[in-house]
Image 1 (cartoon, rainbow, N blue to C red):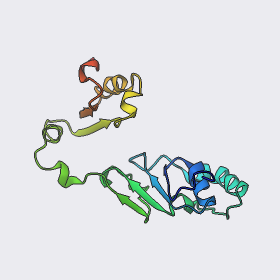
Image 2: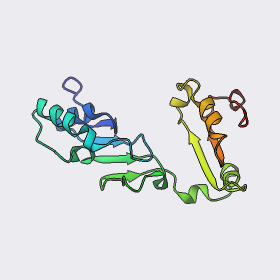
Image 3: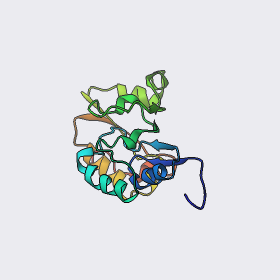
Amino acid sequence: VDRWHPDLMVCDEMDFGAMTAAEHAALPRVVVDVIASGALTRIDRIREPLRRLRAAHDLPSDPECSFLTQDLVISPFPPSFRDPDFPLPATAVSIGPGPSLASHGHPAIDWLRGGEESHRVYVTLGTVFNTESGDLFGRLVGGLHRLPARVLVTVGRDVAPATLPSPGG
């Protein structure tokens, strides 16, 4: 930050060091959510380490950890993916596709809506982690086939669906 003199810091919701550095340098931030549910960060578990981090950088006390969401927060997920117990902060913008984008005859959505199963599961590992996750797709498919659910797995263009185990085994 001191050498580059950026105008803006972009980081993910778990990058507490970048958020602290931006605040220390008086830089505006854009925080990008990486967990659709919003339920990964538990303030009660990180409050004390963040207090020490802020103190080490001469930042004011923030017992509620409001600095985590003081600037723009971007959630690239449909709002329906968010856990109601962890609502988006007032500074957030959800840019994920809403129901209107997925409700007009897309074959995958139509398939997921069909069937007799009482539950639906959609699985994706994104466009980067999907190729860096080792055998995670296979393990997911292997575990999910045991559920009484209709499961849609999207793998992206760089993973061949044929490399995954068949849903039954």
